[in-house]
Length: 308
Image: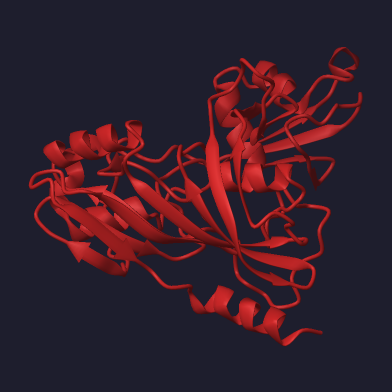
């Protein structure tokens, strides 16, 4: 791990932290700098800051630069919960806390490395560092995702995702009482210009179209239990869309940071990919899979049903 200690000169006063570092450490791309900041590898006077933090002259900036993950992913024998497997596809129930593929601050312990150990043939499928991965779940989201084991399966599944024919349903607990029994959020999503580590609703004509369908399953005092269905699959889509309605996902410190933590620890987000359906990439047969709520969210739900 390489460390550097830098001091902000007068010329850097009021500069954004990520932009200033991009000039001070030119061998690193701004995207990598932002990822390092998000992963906690950058501190200003000993304190973690956002990429958008405005610097003051005299502040000391310390940056730790971990080595990049190898271009060829190393297999890791990590236990996987296999819901379905055949010669072409692998359907997994990912636990909260597991990163899908390597990135800054997450070089090891990924689902992709575990898949490579479980099914070595995926090494030549898709990206070298994301073998077989056609879609992903956030680190703190649990539930179903499908991995392609062959190039043919990879091409078919990515085409199905593009055509929006893959059915992905989530169970989610949000803050607040959702009034409407059901609804649709159709708002474009893109990088937050004030903080590139976050996503945000974009004005018309900007961002990428994002559509989330939701319906109320149960109202529980100051919380609501929802089913959410993705029509599109943008980064953090459900989290951003529900937060835009004033109902951030329980446990979400990024888009619901002003909300109190749940009284029952849930070890991640109260967000679980419960159902997945797609056409088999070779036979064309309709496949449907389900994963019940994990105990971590079930305990919270029981607690909310019991009331104060």
